[in-house]
Length: 91
Image (cartoon, rainbow, N blue to C red):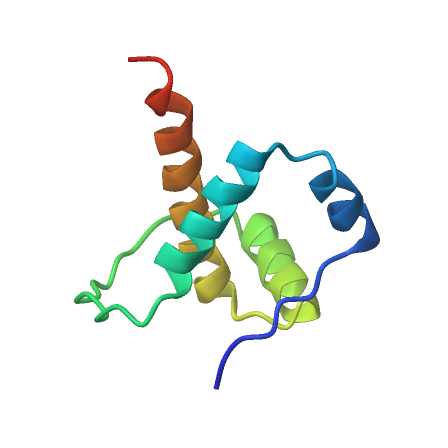
């Protein structure tokens, strides 16, 4: 089953201001994250997070219809993509 992405009106408004380069980067990042590439080996990790923060994060993810651990992994990938995009032009 393919995931369905829902966008808020605010998000779509912001997207209208994207440059062609930003759109291409978004599409490349999206393809990389959602491609049918072989899944890499997963590793169980343990981190300490404030209880209130974790509960709020779980609630928000649940309201968005996303498992909170999936949301954490997505945020990690997005962070890497943003950092990579930010360093491309600075070399």
